[in-house]
Image 1 (tube, rainbow, N blue to C red):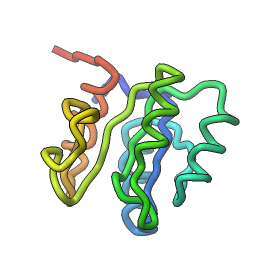
Image 2: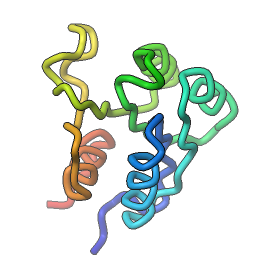
Image 3: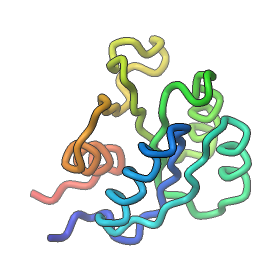
Image 4: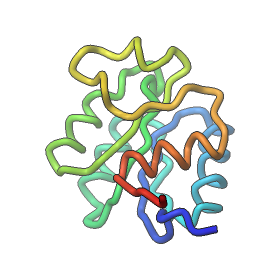
Length: 125
């Protein structure tokens, strides 16, 4: 089944190794190329700076005890679409980040796929 995600380069920012591995498997099954995963804010910012072709990013809101918003700001500056993942719900995001695509943990492959398609503006209808 075509997802429209085949070949898309996706940065994964997630500090929980099991969740990062799950996301990698899900995204690879969708045909995405994974950048990272990055487990810290600094590592993610380095990957963003070093990667010339990045299609999207999936950002855990809380990474190693730090909020991920510096990464979101760097992505906005490069016009790279992204989505948040959070265990607390999108309603807990600061006002400036509300309205961005977000998935609630625990998530399913279908919810990740649909959110990523929405983030990238992919419609398969």
